Length: 254
Image (cartoon, helix red, strand yellow):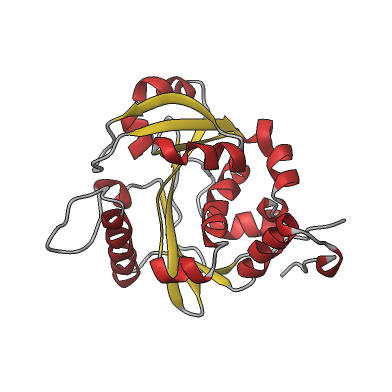
């Protein structure tokens, strides 16, 4: 693990927040959900989170899954604090060979030209957090969406998209430098319409890393999370990753 440098020398609310995210990263285990048990826990966490937001209707199973969970281009992550599932995010790496994800299907007219041009589109969806743990660990949302940022940095020519409710647009603009590329429209499996934001990783990386140093990462960390056994990095899934990856708190100074 990388050491957080210069913590005691930084003052003020902004640096205190940056430190809190870095400290939380040191406590998190990130696990690719390969087993039925892990996926079931994530589906129930999703259900609770989306139901609270009235984004889905109640169901008897009290779980929330969809056809995208089993696609070949999916990374379904669970983030654990002291062994307890704290949050989850689903990342899909879309290409000409794997042209489907919720955002691709909802905004096909906007995103298909990028796939046709050979761009790899990183679509992060189903970002949820445990209600109680998110109150205890205010930095948890940033630690979770950081995985999307790492994916965009790992895959060559990555274009990151986020389909979000209009009231969440300022967060993604401020955090990742995303720009609005399509107004809200109906979205698969959800009751509320979402709008689409996107950006090319290379065009905003300096801004993001300067504003939020904890989004920096090493190649080793990105490889542990996203490397595939097959050579076609953007087209083949990886189901044989190490079961647990320790997230790295990057050096925040120097």
